[in-house]
Image (cartoon, rainbow, N blue to C red; front, top):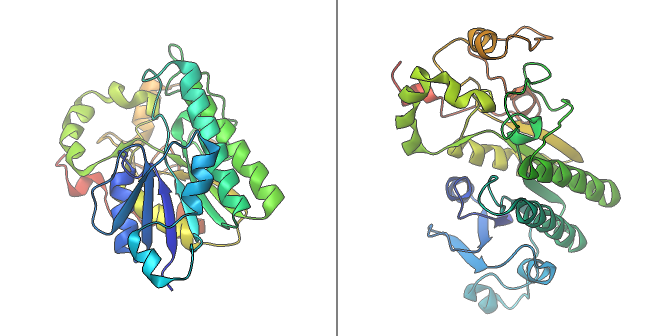
Length: 297
């Protein structure tokens, strides 16, 4: 039977590529967002995730007119993928960024768990590692960045994502549901590879994100793998491609921009500093969109 997926924030930068990937993988996907996603095979519901009642309704109502014809009542969702959020600082006041991101995530997870959904995937962020939106220069604790890192952001966005991970863990502990948090790297859409030569010439542009990236389509694959992998309880996964978004070897980048940051283990020549080892080993992720497929040099 086809799995029904509720996807929040499917109209955003990451969602508008991840949702079609899931549809092509055979899922029935229903998007809730403040604006619709025009994508074949996807329904849309305009809803505000900061309103708990709207979220409960979104999860417990018919998704489209054909549902009425079946006469089976409202069908449950097999999984919820939650990407809806204010995507960074400096879009809304700091307190609004924190409120929307934390309350929205609480509402989505609470409604999903209480309505019996056993698989929830939420968007966390590389900003939890504390450097992306830090005040001035700040060193990372160590490289590579893995999921056991002591995350310590100083900004409202990164802090909201840390709180969301704790919210997810709390609901997973109480309910026994699988809730996986994806620390998503810098999302790259297909047309954005045209910017990479500029990044190569000016590596300081991507210093704060440790030169990480995740192709939006590979992020769709990661969501798919999360939906299909059961029984892990609460988990955090870095969502990143295999290598740095630079044509300079990883160690040379680190030595130039972060000379005081230690490496507790060996690292590959171009291995990503936002480590995706866990999603490769636990979920079986295999990137399909290395930047080298689209950029020369």
